[in-house]
Image (cartoon, rainbow, N blue to C red):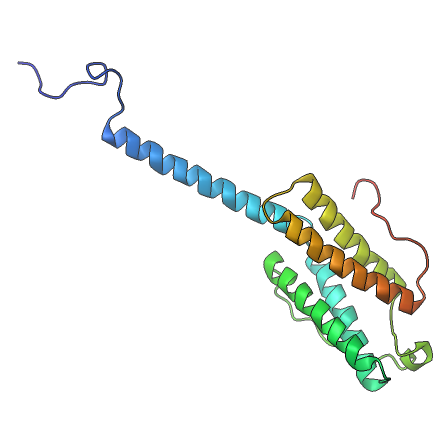
Length: 178
């Protein structure tokens, strides 16, 4: 007795409803996996919690020094640094950094340096970290790369202003290979 159900061969190799559902679920799963890998891999690839913590600490120290040794530009400098800290905190959260960054004590020598207790090596490192992130975004762009690059360039511009105020000399460049 012949079955009323046809085989795939009988229907011209048309996939069954079950096969189409499995293929659909597989396609959705692959799409989600790729999207997750791209989102986490490119946005956080160049982030380093220690570096971000150091940058936040440096900015907090600068604000503390400005509060202890204020001048006519302190309010603007503090607002600028707080904006940088806000950006750094967003990057820390995106990178999964969980530790609290402590406010260092004010530098008693800050008044001798126009109120700026800057560390040129730290500022140079922060510029290099941002240059490396931009380089990574240019090498592996995604839909948000342009905005990320613009954000990081704005941070670099602020860091360069700080380098100038602190008397740091020389151009900071990204070293080959990282």
